[in-house]
Length: 325
Image 1 (cartoon, rainbow, N blue to C red):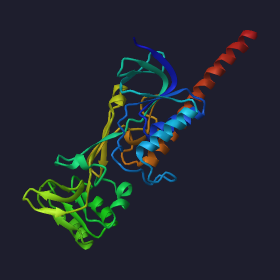
Image 2: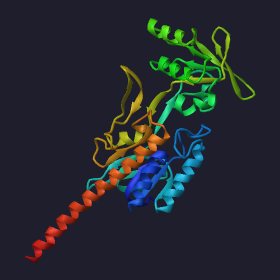
Image 3: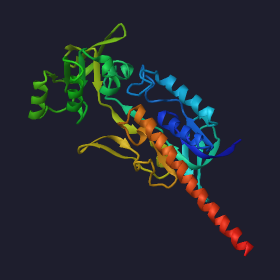
């Protein structure tokens, strides 16, 4: 049997952005439901970094803290997958859950995050978030002074290599399937002592569950202890698309490095009443920035609801005043 409940706000996605937005709303005495499918992007990571006061907290522990805070203010959490959402003729939205139930909301906050699409190199996915990483700010300190490799995957390769060079004097960039470097790029890396290796990467060498090297198609193995990879950042935009919000290219210069759902700085989208926050709209945001964006969107949604309620109250007040005349 399909059941329908109605909330002021339904938050789709229960990561830092979604939970922060939900807590802000619950603290403003809004009825709020967070729907989460239990597939956080940063699950493989050992800890969250650059989050003041929570440095090194395991991702699962941070989520547990956020859920407890939400519950303490009366917010609700449901583990489910959202298949789609639609606007209702009389206003508000209906959200369809994978179990057949549906929930209605006056406003939606979509915080579904993104998927990291890795290059098709054997072994990368198994080491992802451990000794295969992408962000020098998220993981760099943990691999400082080690032999770091960078797998060139696109237009950000030289930029990523330069950031990794800040962390170690032993950095090697593997061109893999990328074209040769431009002369100025090659000079920059040579000046910093970065080794450039041509030839396609065939796989990784792992000993005792630790990365030890990168294996080339020629059979040569280049010793590294960590490998930086630039994935393609693909917004989990299915719910947004069901509401009429198409994803757009995330650009680095003139090159597409992923996709995002567009929104203004408050999280408001082109569909009135639908807001987004976190990596679904800002793929470069770290955890603390995603949480901040979620909190901001939550406060904006509350203000939007207050304005709507005030308009209704004024209209009712005028009707009562007119009836007394």
